[in-house]
Image (cartoon, rainbow, N blue to C red; front, side, top):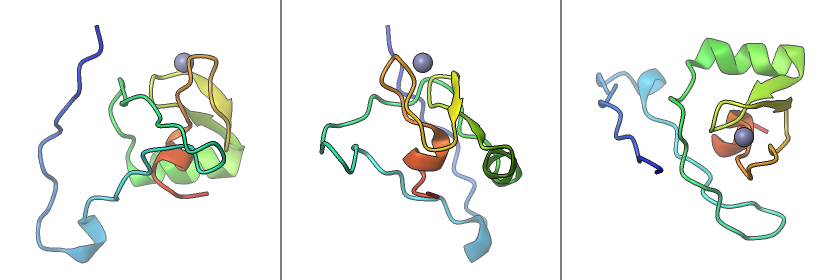
Length: 83
Ligand SMILES: [Zn+2]
């Protein structure tokens, strides 16, 4: 069963901490991506994904930075529009 997680708001009034809007579909195919099943990584973790060119997907798999796992989940870098 897929549970959609509603994470507590991190908004503190600091624009640097504003939630990043998610990309909800594959820009190439227009098909919607499945809802994330693992928690959104911290910004520093996203930076590490870029640096190492290996990223966690929204269901916790590891793929190349701009990749999509075999379950159809995009990397967080894609989901968050970083790349
Ligand atoms: Zn997966």
